[in-house]
Each structure stands twice: as C-alpha cells, then as structure tokens.
Length: 564
Image (cartoon, rainbow, N blue to C red; front, side, top):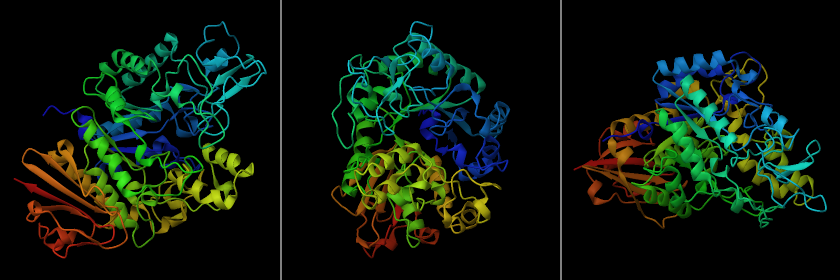
C-alpha cells in the first residue's frame, strides 16, 4: 500500500520548558532535548512535536509569540535548534513545530504597529472594533482564559479581540497580507528542514463579520463559538496554505480543532481535501460540569467508548485519526482515565496505552506518559503557574461565586499545570531535570516514578509503550485494520476488533479495579497473545489459555492476533 509516513508514525510531544534543563537555570531547553534523543530513539517513536520555542514574553508559556523566526532566549539559540534538527534527523527522528497563528503576542512588531495607526500598513492585521455607545466592549464574549474577550487599547482608542489572554490578540486572517506573512514564515521554517506543523486552534482563524452577543453557559460571559469556530473562510484559508506552502514539502500536519465533528474533520483532513493530514478532536476529554471545564468527574465508559468508536468508524476510509489521552493542556492520563493509586498505576497506565495504540490513527505520547507520571498534589492556588488556572480560581473562588472546598477538587483534577511538571528522569534531587531550582515544582513521587527506574525494569510502563510501538511497525492490521466495537453497553470493559486482509486482532481492556467476567470469543480461542499488561511471562504460551477462568483482573488488558 502507498502509505504516507505519518500514518505509520508514533509522535512524542515535548513541552520544552519541562523536558530537560542543560544549563541549571531551572528551565528546559533545546540542548536538553538534544541530550535525550537517544532515550526517545530507544522508546521507538518516529516524530517529536515540540510546543513553541519561538521568542515570547511567556504570558502563556510560549503560545504568545513575539517573533516567529527567533528562538526564545531561555531555550537557547537558533544554532541550538539547528543542532537539534541535525542530531534528530541523524537518528531517523523527525521534528514537528508548533504553529500558533490564530494570535500573536501583543509585543509582536505587527501589533505594536497596529495599535499606533488605524490607517497604517499594519492597521488591520488584527481584529479591532469600536465599543458600544456606552463605551463598553463590542459584545459579551468571554476569553478561554477567563474574563472578557475584548481589551480596550488606549493608544488606538478601540477594542481588540483576544480569544485567549489579553496579551494574545487575534490576527485578522481576512487580510491577505496577514496570510502572506504567515505563509512566508512557514516556508522559511520548511526550508530550515522541519518535518511538519501542529497548528494551534487552527479552526478559530476565521471569524464572522457580525459579532453579536453570545449565549451565556457554564460561566459569566457569552459563548463566541458560533462566530469564531469553523468560521466562514477557514477551509478557504487552509487550502490556500496548502497550495502555497504545505504541498511543496513532505510534511506531517495536524490541526488543533476545538469543536470539530467527524463530518467537519473530513473537510479539514479528508483524503482529498488538500488541507491537513489529521486533526485533534477533544470530545473524549470534554466533561463539562457546573463550573464549565472544571470538573473532577470521570466520563462514563459507555460514553467514552461511543465517542472514540464514532471517530474510528466515521473517519474510516475518509480521513485519518489522531490518538491521544493527554497533552500539555490536559491532566495526566493515568490520573484522569486510569487509577494513579500505587497498587494500580502501572497496570492502568499500560491498559490505557494498549487501548489507544491498537486503534486506527497516529498515536501521540505526551512526555512522561510513557513513565506513568501522575497529576501533581497541589496544596493551594499559590502553586499554580498556568494563566488559565490562576484566572479560573480568581473568577470562581476569589470573587466569592463558589467556595474553595467546592471548587478545589475540580480545578486540581484538570489544571494544565498537571502536565507541565518536569519530566522525572531519576531519583536524584529535582528528579534529574535540573541542577537548579525548577520553574515549576517536580512531583514529589519522582523517587518511585522516573525514567532510570523504568528503563531498568522490563515490566515498566516504558517497556510496555516500547512493545506497543514495535508491534505497530510489525503488523499492518494495527495501522490499516477496520475497527469494530464489542460489548457496547458494558460499563467495565472496552473491547474491540481490528481486521485487515488475513489478520484480525481482539483488544480487551478492563477499565475497573475489580474482576470482571469475560469470555474470549470462539474465533480467538487459539489466537496468539501479542501483548498483555500482567507481565510478559503470561505471553509465553502464545495463546489465550489463561483466560479459561472467564475473568479479567483489575485493569487487565491484552491483545490477541488471529491470522487466517
């Protein structure tokens, strides 16, 4: 089959600030990443996606970019980045950059000029509006990071739109000069040798001309979604991007597309859409509660299965899936979907990995996921570094809308800071991440959970991920197979099959901490066990005889392969 390389690849996401510090300043950097390439090669991944490393004032940890063609001083130099590219490519690893072009920093040269002069060359690079007759904001929209989505600029005498921080003004993509600036910048990076782009909130680059008040739901401000997500020209602009830049290089592209449906995903990433290779969807990590996204409740397993299965079946043959449990904006997978108690952490982390990596799509591993890293035990709001968490606590609690006791379990369960604590490399001081004071505290469980211990233990979470990646490279059914969900209504088990040519897989995952009855289907009675999470010794018989008891143990997972 003529398969693009990105369909067979496994991606590892690096949050540079928290990956590895090479100079003792407490902040991860490019040389730190270069020094750990052999670790990633041993894991078996093919692609490294780096969160932004561009020049930035760091209001939103690098997602507020002031210069797209310079490296943030804290991370190193352009020479360090070129060395990373060279060393990665020398090991057969590809580098995907984060592309953040819905907005810039308010310190970007374009915005500095835009606020000076309405009629100047940069006057309409951003989305400016006059206030209402009473001087208030143009509408009631709220920002993703809390507070209003409009900020009044004294110098220009108008409001500018910022769907995120007020230091992240939204670009005006309706201006062809803006699009050309972005495309020229992307071409510059492609010529430097990068291998693709992950595109931040790319479904939000096109806004409607009319901007009425939005419906208030789960918060204090109006919802901008109907006017800013999947806007009127988003597909035109992405086709233009593809024609001008993407089609000229052998790239991997993935769009972060909040609010996307399978039907819409086929427009963004259809086999013949000429836009992107794949998109990120978030329905499986979106569990809204009475405080909006701040919720400590787990999604019921039947609902989770329905969501993931819908994406598997509705994109089949039409578009390509991205597969992930967590990332830099989500809490730790084992804490959210599994069980991070010491007794079950390793088992449930392996179970989650098995469940995801056997589906059709490109798997994404977020740094530390392969170690079974857990959420951080926050003691109080002073522990937060993330602007979204800080603003949310202020908006909900400090203002008196809800008590600390009610809100605290919800915000700590899903705060983005959970994902941003440093990688736990070993059991030395600061987990081997830095010789200085880390910019954000290390999780205190690093003595037990760290890469050095995982590499030394053949039954570790790391080695389970390593096996899953190796299996993906060996068996075409994992990449290409059709998906079918079994036991749809079970609240305990996630069971599905994958079928391709003469191969068929049975994937069985117990999502609970109790024994659950299960009988292997007759057609898999003599199948070979490819991988199991209760120890490699149980696979030596090459069959499924150990399932004759008819019971699955807590968080048990295994994969059987039947070749006709």
